[in-house]
Length: 150
Image (tube, rainbow, N blue to C red):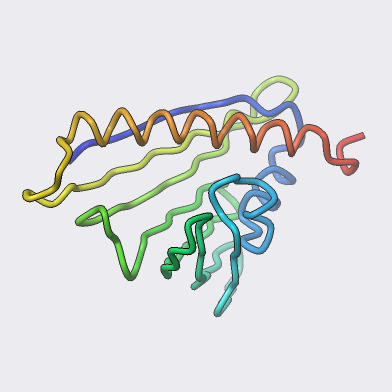
């Protein structure tokens, strides 16, 4: 199972970065690949929450996912529910580690490509890493420009 992992440092409060990047309704603002995001259900208990949500990308493709948030450890675990295409399965975890003057945000994406896919695992991994790098950079730029950090 291929694994893509990428980190970026965002120069602001770790709790604010965690809260904003896990506010699903804001994903079209934070990530260029989403046109629409809608939270379907939210269940919170203590420092944990489960979100069920729907995303639509810029091509109009819509899918559902779920996310478990650990507010204490600053970890988000997400999985696509339906559909998962072009992946056979896809799992995400985002980790937020406080560092001097900010937070190191690390995204890990484990995925499987169907055996009959038109691309290899290596090609899919390269594409995922390119997308991840671009998405993290855009997210950093948006977060560091928000007035709540001034």
